[in-house]
Each structure stands twice: as C-alpha cells, then as structure tokens.
Length: 308
Image (cartoon, rainbow, N blue to C red; front, side, top):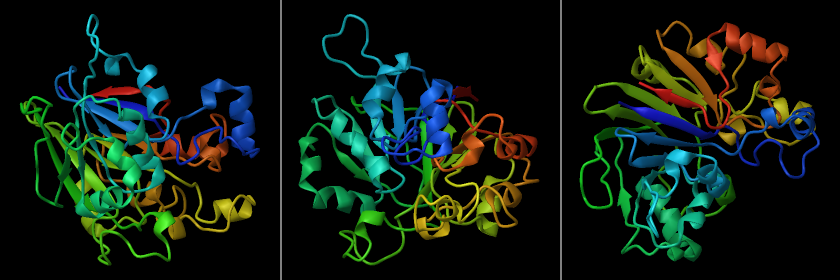
C-alpha cells in the first residue's frame, strides 16, 4: 500500500516567511492553522521505511512533527528514512540534507546535474559518502530505491523531464553540471510494485505540455506545483521583480494556468504543493481558494497523509 505524507506544502521561505508582512503571512502569524513549512514529502510502500522527496530547510521540524519518521522505540540510533530523492537543486530542495549529517545510513538519488551541484559545494561533504551514497538517476528509466541494508524497497520510481529552469543561485554562473538544460527540473512517477498504484509529483513546472498531459491522465493522485496564483503575482504585490514563469513556475489560474491545463484528464486527487506566501489561495476563505476547490484541487496542511 502506497503511503504519502505531505511534510510541508509551502515554497521557499515557508508561511509565514520570517521577514514578510504580506496579507498571507500576517494571517498565518495570527492563525497557526494557515502556517506551512517548505515543500517536502515522505513516501513508503511498507509503512516502515520512508523515502523523502526533497529535503527542505524545515526538515528537522518536519521529522519531529511526523511520528512515522521517528527513531524506533528502544533504539539508541535509528531512522526509518531510507533515502532522499531530489527533483531539483534549489535551496528549498537540498538544504535539509545538512540536517541529516549525524551518521545514519541513507541514499541520495538525483540527476547528475543536481549531484554536480552537491559535489561543487564542499559543505555537503558532512554527509560521508561511505554512509550516505549519492546515486545518479536517469530520466525515463525506472529504478527501485534500496533500503540501507541493500533490500528492495517495493517502490518503482521514474523521473522525467519537466519544463523549468536551473537553480536561481546559479544564474549568470557556470553550472557545475554543464550547459545542458536537461536534469535541472524533474517530475516523478512513483509506483507501489505490489499493488500497481501510482502517483505523480511535480514540485516545479513552468508549463503543461501535451506530453505531460498524456503522462498524467487518469492518475489517482497528483501533487503539482502551485507556487503562484497568477504569473505577475509577486510584482503586483510589491514582493519581487520576477514573474512565476521567470522563476520556472506555472501559475494556478489563467487560460494557460495549471487548473485549466490539467482539467478533464480524469485525475483522482489533485493537491498543490510549493505554494508561495504571496499566493492568496492559501487563505481558506478567499475567492481564489473557492475557485481552486470548485475545480477539484486541494491545498494540503502539513502532515496530510494520503494512502493509495
């Protein structure tokens, strides 16, 4: 049985963001139910061994808040986390790795482009590769992540290219992984080998192509990039100078937005992830939330668990 826990649903900075006084962050300071930590997921096929999808800067807090990720009772040192699968090299996807430096064995799975970023930054050497191996993954080639003892996990994962962009902190600089545009932004199809049930995870996506529609059609569960409600959201709110597209993220709304583009595909549950604090859909009683829910989408709270 495939289990998914939403450890965090917010974009970089979380909600409330430490230095932000926008309407959403103000509301979240007054009402903790609106708060969200930065986007990360935990998945399992056996409810005993878990793989993280991205390691957010809030990972330690997320682990503490999630009993399924706690050390086994009676064990001096133990973690049920068997691996981390990275979908990109952004800060809010990799920084949490530094909170996992205490010598427990697990594997890091990522495209060569992202592994090159880790190699280029010596701070990630606190994760001893003899204990925490870095395993390259190729697009459109299914693989089964391993447990720390080498046993099979019961999960099959296929990474695929998604329209996006490289990590923002590398803009104007040579990418450690080379000039190729491939590998910077990945989606994942995750399948429970025992039941055949699958879900799709896309924490970043700049646009929905026909090929992507065909891949996602009929899925029982989709967790999808919900960074901004409208493309110019940060600009009009006075919070930034970039559009969603410039940051590699599709808007929720609009004729070319995710809600319209992914309608009528027979997808079962549709959850938005990586939601920026500027996005008014985070407010439970906003018009934007109403439109989103009417279209069959949800914004999960941290700790939401879905079973397939």
